[in-house]
Length: 127
Image (cartoon, rainbow, N blue to C red; front, top):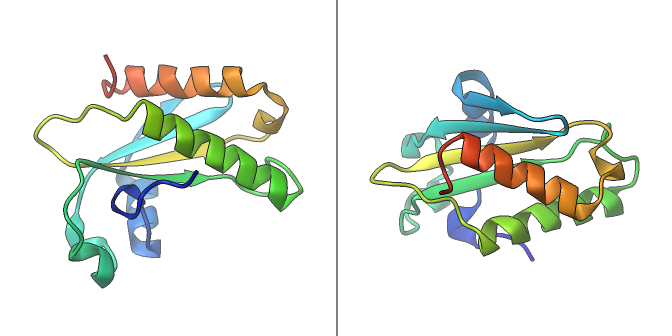
């Protein structure tokens, strides 16, 4: 299941800004980047959408797995996890970017989701 439109992080400028300025939280197989939202960088069609307290993007490069089917399964797995346990954000709006490291395709789904939960907790986004 994909994230709803209001929770999706899109746009090259947005991803570049999160990569450059975002605060990083590292795990053995995942990297979480977090940045205060800057709506003026969003594409025009997303600026008119109702604001969301968080937006997230998941990056799974071809270094993680050669086959696109496997990469998409990993991305959908993380999207479903974020919907089931959404980050708790106070008054501010945040942009999140989850990047999978090479070798993460070999993990069990439970291990990958456990690391995702641990990084969200480390960032102060879950209780």
